[in-house]
Image (cartoon, rainbow, N blue to C red; front, side):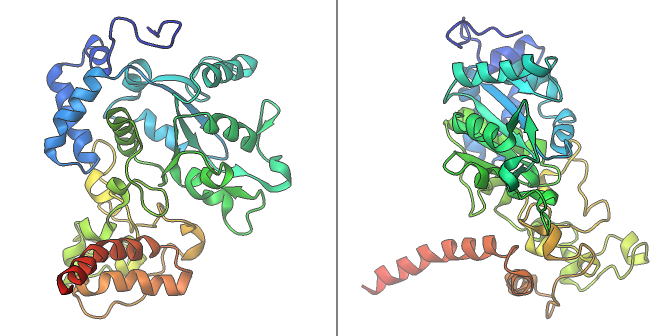
Length: 372
């Protein structure tokens, strides 16, 4: 049920908090949700009251979800989200006016609903894009309603307040862009230059990270700080290796040598089995999946680097990163990324280098000022 009036506003001050309350969400649960989102956004706990205040006041935003060249994995992840559930997203927090997988409308009726949203809420709605966009041969390899994916993306993303590219396909082109990339698949940022776009890569995107981005936008009126790949720093600011529960085994030189061996059963490091954790930036170890129950490395499989550009082409999934001398990860972690970059064209290490330079710059400037 949509309580918006003809001006697109919620009459009677129906804030997100009030809508959740009407759906049976207690104040205690609402505060717990706000605290969880504050932590997910890597904000200090002191910011939780601001998130609570914002969601107490902000009105129900409009969102459209576009599906292009994808496997629908990100939608599947959303449908299994726990904080909040997809039902809360659809019925309460967001007014999802267009989503091919979950909407009742079809054909011309569905396309009319999309056009109505773009026209009536221009510059006010959020757009989520799932899947890559083919550009080869005029984009004919992907069409909906007689329009190419690129035409749709330029129209919808270009008129949105902000666009969130969920999954690696929407972020970088994904598997569809693997060499030789027959359809000319690219990510949304490349297909729609100039639009306000944030990338949430991963196969699939973690639904909690998506929720955190939406909450950040509702709280602060803007997208969160991003790295050089357009990814939110709260989710992609640290290497997986930095927070991995198997890292102590790496430091101790205790590695799995073959699948199913005694070391594997004991939870030793998967570096030799091809784990890309030392060169991948994502919050998988801390955010986890399935209500924070587990994540791939905890389940016994090495990280494949799915949140990094061209991960499918840059290194075989089960070939290990270059040898790391010694056991001191503090001295060698950045070297891992740099050495790997030399071997595969720099895909995984760019973020680490940029972050290091940004971190060192203030210190260098302070030293210079002191000398003066």
